[in-house]
Amino acid sequence: MIDPKLQTLLMVIEKGSYSDAADALSLTQPAVSQHIHQLEKELNIKIFHRSSRKINLTKEGEIAVKFAKRVSSLYRELERKIKDEALGRHSYVIGITHTAEASVIADVLALYAVSHQGVKIKIKSDSIKNLYEKLSTYEIDLAIVDGKPLKKYSSILLDTDSLMVVMGKHHPLAKKQIVTLEDLKKERLVLRSKSSETRAIFDRVLSSFNYSLDEFDVLLEIDNIMTIKELVSKEEVVSILPRSACHSYGDKDMLSLRPIENCDMMREINLVFPKDFSHRAFLDELLHLYRKHFLVNFYTSL
View: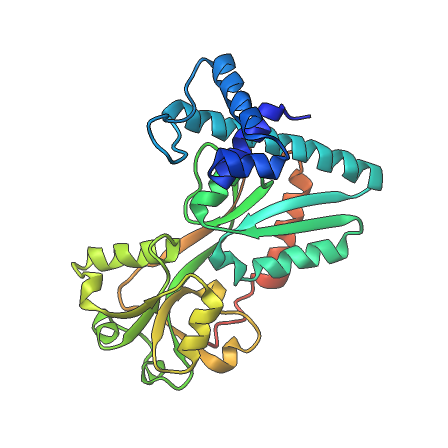
């Protein structure tokens, strides 16, 4: 069982106060304070800045919380694996980016689960930064992320993808084979948020041509790709999205995709996992299913 003092620390961080943590743990506030004090004494550190009324971690406290999360996640993983063994099943927690959530990878994971009796897959979508944090604390078994993977993890290249200008099927730009940046400056844009890899790539492309995003008419910044596609399909705005995110049923009827002239907006899609991940057969079959059923560019007619 995880050390109660670590549980208390994590609850204080989650709730933001000793009193709320005490309520959540069915403890008194002095008991919570004692747990934190004992933990500080054992580690010979100060976990929180005492001068602030808010719960602000010291540098040492940040380290303590990071490893507390890891210990907690490992314990939950232990419970999960023991339960899986007793039930004769395999379960995986897989993190995907918001972009991947709209791509074919969810279909691949569903196909794998359906075709393997006793397999349970749980998908968590989050930002790339948060997914890497969850990998480090073993909250997820595997992450499917855009861009180059961090070297501290093992990885397998799943696919390469490219960013495209996305517009409604009858938008004037759909009549062109290639869109220029000057064309885009005349349009109203809906873009992904600054924290997304999609946006980072587009920003780098603009910078390479000495353009600034301030020169473009950006109406909205949204993380939800389905919302972006819905807005674009109404043909009043255009966007920049990965080709792989425009494969859903109905996309072919509503959307057109065009490259930007002289712009290389390729990106990698990688399977990223801890170096001690032991289910290599699972990874190999995911790759097989992806390449067999979904690597065909069935969206080239968009």
